[in-house]
Length: 168
Length: 391
Ligand code: SF4
Ligand code: SF4
Image (cartoon, rainbow over all chains, first blue to last red; front, side, top):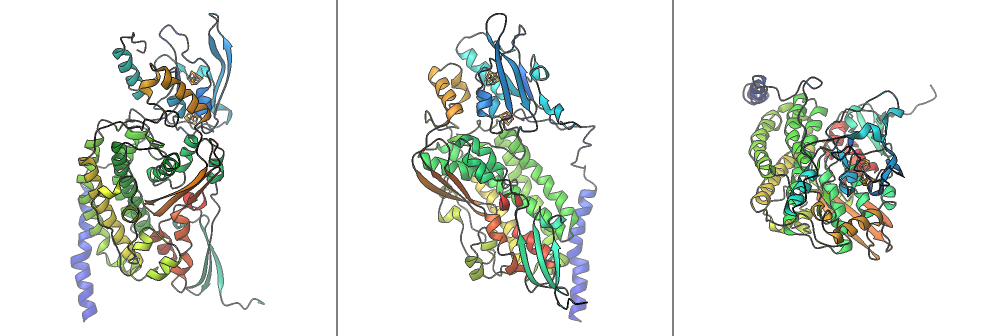
């Protein structure tokens, strides 16, 4: 008798509590996204693919100082320097091995020239290993991302010191 | 048949959905009873401890994220506290409070994943979806802070990588508001659910004495009623300023540990609320020239900062001769970092005391004599992460 009573209590009093939760969420909007078609916005500090930035006149910011390669915990960056036509030091080869890279963002933090930035793209899959060896040409852009946290810092510091706002 | 042995040997794993990674358990079965169980680890060995010996201190930090990947901030915190102890760096108040806040968020994060996967192992499918929904809010905070959702590397030697994001306060308060409501849902689904109770009550029991003898820590130890929590017993990073209770179990079975972890989530929320209410103003980095990277703001216009920046990035900093140990209460138990230094700019030896690994050692004790089907429950309620077990 006691067993039967217990079963009745279970079925009619305790279990429905759980079912109510399920029913409650059945009528709510789903929290998931229809991923490949819709994407969530990334946070401003998100660390995705690398970009190398140019000055407004088109010359590269990177001076091949090697600080990003020194900071890289995964030893993913390789570079060789050369002089451009104005006699300034520039990178002849600048490669990032995305297979090694762990997207830690240390290169971005180390760079004293504001040259390298991590953007918001994160879909890298491909069929060949060689396609993950990114060269300078693939990464060079004019303005990588407007809302980079470091850039805002630079802009503020420049303003404070009355220097021209070189970063657009 | 010449083999007259009564027991059957069964390999569970390394590829098994409910061993939470690549754990292999060699089981000797007598019918449905487990006679002997032996966990075999090493399938995910990444050599993290060895790798850290060959890296400058600040470059060894990203390795720690990848140990217990469900609690990255706790690992960062443990390593940074150890290095700070070695270098005798004084940490600003704000950083301490922010770290406590983040570490407790991490505890919730880890417990939520545990709850979802444990319930999934026992057949309650929908829990995983619910807990991951809440976890998403915490991951969003990680992303806003450090820029990644799992491998954050946000807590750095001497402070934080960046200042807290502007909407940090708002997001955290949202969590404080939402999670208690959702916990009620979880309890409705599981706490009084007859199936869940039958699968966890008196299963995977470990007595207080055994728990101490095996060196267990975290919920595994407290589930048996032993009051040991490093946040109370050996406070670090300003935990002595916070008011919270240490959740305790009684019997040391899987159901007790389930209740205990839910209670820990509630206590963590209390700590987070205190941390966010009392967050002091101040710098997000300690000012220790030559050891802590100067803030990005200074590098552009202060020659001295730029020089230190170059120096730290290229050659790191020299550590004093000696050894330190720093243990923290990670979501899974006592996570300790032992760093021995030979005076150079790289650690001579880093030894991690991983809670998952030590807790896993008690698995035979938990399952031997029990039913085969309860092995899954025992592994689940131990809360292991194989990345940390194998390092
Ligand atoms: S990207 Fe920056 S840190 Fe790297 S070589 Fe160029 S200037 Fe130096
Ligand atoms: S993100 Fe990290 S791992 Fe990747 S290239 Fe930069 S420093 Fe190296």
